[in-house]
Length: 130
Image 1 (tube, rainbow, N blue to C red):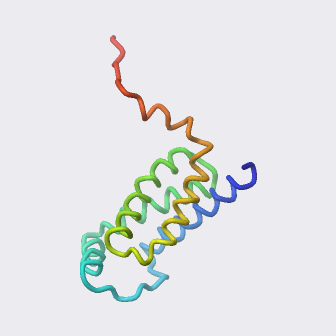
Image 2 (tube, rainbow, N blue to C red):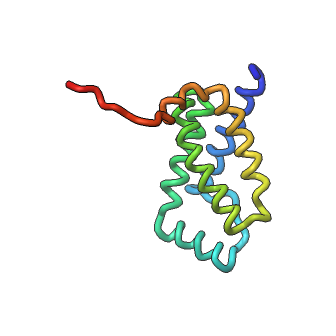
């Protein structure tokens, strides 16, 4: 795991860094999409929501690449990956393979860090008294 974890972290950072930059620079041209997928894509682009999601991907990807705030980056990318998987499951199931590979990389990076996420799964919160 000493070798696999940093490799997976760098690959995940590279994937999200590059694909996030693509949301701003459009260097990967996608084929024209039709139907609900095309309408969804057009709405994301027309509303500039793509800039928000791409910005989150770029920041988290670079944090992983530079090995800074990795727990935060993994946490943020969990939400991004959940949306990517929901998109592929509901709209484009034929193209889900890259999303599943990215999910596998995410688990490889997140698994050794699972102790940092345990406070999120507290059953009941009691606030300290003043």
